[in-house]
Length: 223
Length: 159
Image 1 (cartoon, rainbow over the protein chains, first blue to last red):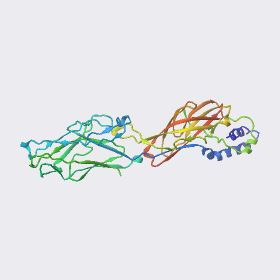
Image 2 (image 1 turned 90 degrees about the vertical axis):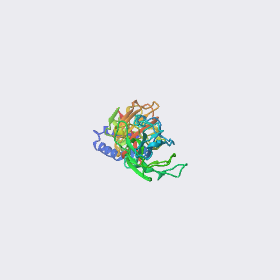
Image 3 (image 1 turned 120 degrees about the vertical axis):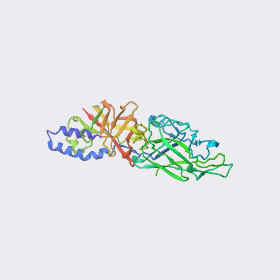
Image 4 (image 1 turned 90 degrees about the horizontal axis):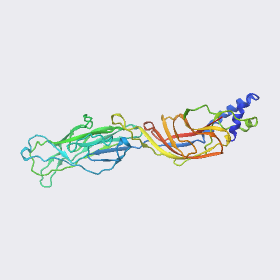
């Protein structure tokens, strides 16, 4: 570094030795890359791949809008309906209710759902570069079963509508369980998708009096 | 204070030129020898920023932090008055925003890639300045597909 002063001095010496000054400048330019070799380097990584899915009650450290991050929540909420004996098999759809208490979106704490009749379903994905998307699906068994009877109820008897406070568009579409895996939608990277589902039992068949249960699983896959 | 980069004279030169030199250096901008500067974390692991946007979009920005032990060799400008800047050239991944906190010997500040920001102004009274920078980097994660090197340097304007 001690040569720095001399480099500047050379420029000042332009009048008595103009040619030398020109040479000095030329040399300085040649050496410029070498000086940058002493610069310090930070290497930043690409953004990590992430996925978040919430069905019913979930957990977040605060909200996304305030810098929160997702937390694990192992709750499996239940949706149910007790069909009065006089309407069993009438074909009049029976609205179901849930034990979910999730009303607010963890995006910004806005009350998007009206539990217990509505169940929150939402999620997002992150990818390096922000391109790509995840695939949301739901898998149901063939039928609801009972421990007190061999009778069953096909899962195709259960359907749902989809809406949200402040956004009536069914971003996660309404549908009917198919006794298998049903694709719901793709979720583009960096987009928070959410809706509130209200479930209905179609009630088109007479079945034995009993309690029938089954569990569905929502899956968000990020390739 | 953020300024666009000025024309820079290289601080290195050859012995032959030194032999014909007389008097003090002109006011000019030089690259400061910071070759003893050591980032405690050379790789900044980033995370996605969480800032709300329209239509429930998630931020495309990534951020990360590191601590850097700064050591500047100011011997060539000893007993002169100068202004030292931290500079980050323009980056192929677009605008990179940098903020740093210090322990007081140099100024805290922020800059965007392609700019420089003042970290010291006044007489150069010691051969070295040592400082710890706590650096926070924010970049457009949609353009950072893999690791990206950010090469910082310090410049000095001397009167």
